Image (cartoon, rainbow, N blue to C red; front, side, top):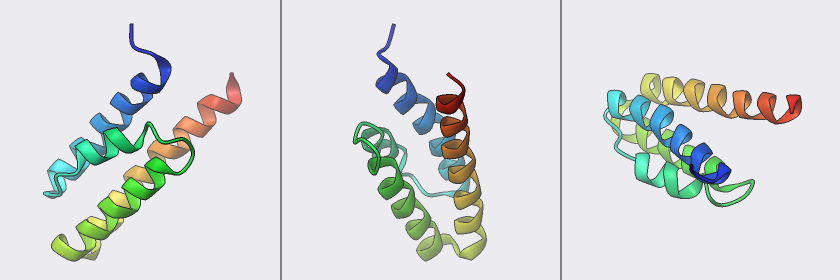
Length: 83
């Protein structure tokens, strides 16, 4: 069984990476590696992904990426508060 940090990193990279892949922004590996940096790693990776989506695909792709990212991060906080 995976340690908790690795499991969270896998979940983030799969959900956010799949969304970025659909949008045409291949940064899932960055999201996976950044999930291991406490507190700010995933935020920097997501900011990078949103910036790359904005620069390459336009504001609609960046907005969609931001919505998915905030949903994933919000669900993580909710689970942490519950247990």
